Image 1: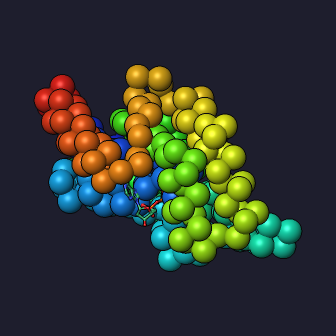
Image 2 (image 1 turned 90 degrees about the horizontal axis):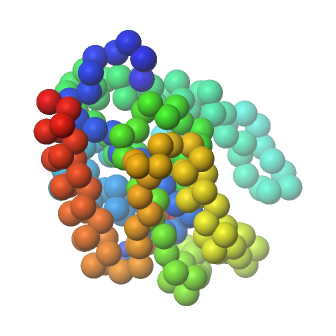
Length: 183
Ligand code: DAT
């Protein structure tokens, strides 16, 4: 989003956290409830092939961050022009310019819940334990706190459907306040 672009009428929300905590499900719920455009960053990376090679050791593609940011900037600019905001979900939060987001929600899941979700997802033992360790060490929460103003970063539980419902409601309320304050 260009710095001299139009003032946003609706907020941009980032949902982040360790893989499996419920980012995509929660972002989708918020998109439906609040009417923000859902940007599934993982899908965007695949669609636009935002890769700069392959890491054979880790058996993954290497993310081309610049390309991803260019693709996202177009989406953010268009949303702002259309008078809407976005709800983006991604497991990395420190790669985005701080000015893009008005609220950063860090979803947290307990170890047993995450274990079951990552097992169901078919993660092998190494990948599953790496992610569970990252969740226990609150890696993404620390990154969010280092990358954004503390008052916009909120850590919330995402273990149950009740949690998801509560998080959806909280974000909907928060968006209303944001719009009132930024009218
Ligand atoms: P992520 O995008 O963080 O990788 P997801 O949204 O794909 O996570 O969710 C992973 C799985 O867990 C999926 O089967 C839906 C389920 N799930 C997510 N959040 C949940 C919640 N709060 N309560 C119950 N199940 C949840």
